[in-house]
Length: 360
Image (tube, rainbow, N blue to C red; front, top):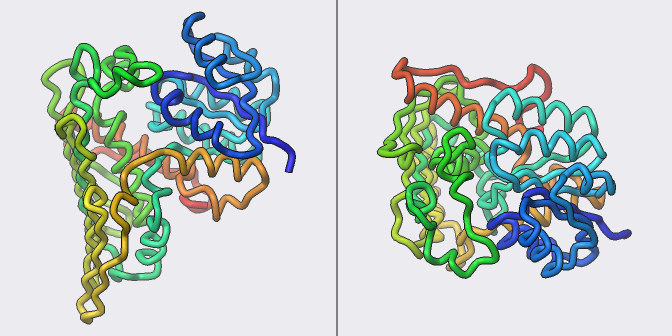
């Protein structure tokens, strides 16, 4: 197969620490173009990773017509950059949150479908070993009709959203997190978009539920939220509770727990403990084998999927974080924050365009 020429828009701390090294490790990938602000920083990332071209103008990078593009710019720029990448015919991986505005997220879904290009979101949990098999079990009725889901996510990110300098462990990363991205509410700073997006996307993707209304609450002692809680009512009547906090001690593995309860039993997933347990009313219980450390988070899977899709791979096999789930995640978080801000009770979640299936 011919090499896949890849461009990266937004070569900040996470792209340099995760996405670009993951791309460089894949055989047959050419690091064609890279974009970020700052002459010194741009040249540093270009020379270190061996990009063929670098510019602070993303349009110049896209003018080279890359086959695939990673959009890892600040949250509020995702729509602009992904639109431009799709317009040049690229397959696109966009960092989560997909956008901040549900209308923009659904617009990206429509554009990708019209262009016949893959658009996936960097939800790394979906690609960890065995997780797609858990989704298949739930889809096949492992717990019967899903009636309730509870998901809680607590990560070691307090210093990112509320601190002056970010986590100490990031003192030695290629770049440090930019406070303007993580601590500015206008740019999507705060735990809801920055971290709860993991839990929301995972809950929706694993279960196939479609939230219709949501009531939310936040704890925001400063400019952005540090903790969130929400209750969802889904199409069909299932209820979901979501919660999260930037509270884990630095260096701790993020706590991620998800319970899916249904008419026939309960699935109990503890990602931080590498544990999956199925308990059924008929006694057909199962402890799903998960090796120690297999569910320690990384975002390599979405990057590999992007390259496989650019090579012509089937979306059903490779894309475990589809744009439609990403858009519904944005809509859910936006409605949760709106409910929390105005205290008006449940808010409607901006649904998918009225064609196709959410997970097609």
